[in-house]
Image (tube, rainbow, N blue to C red; front, side, top):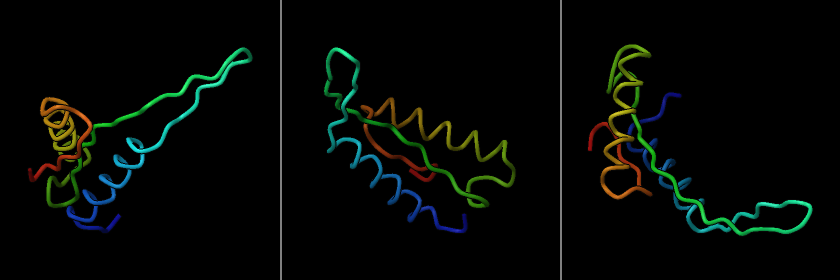
Length: 80
């Protein structure tokens, strides 16, 4: 809450980079499997990208799908 689009995008990028750089382990009783994770993230803020929950969700959804269409594992904001 109450942060700019640039700060939101920076924090989302930090999360994306953390997931990409760290190995996660899926465990079962018999064995462990290393998992490399990546994530695509869309960012939108209020009131810059909409004035209601519905318009914000539409803006962030569009940003997310642009991130996926641009090769995945990236962060795009509604401004990009």
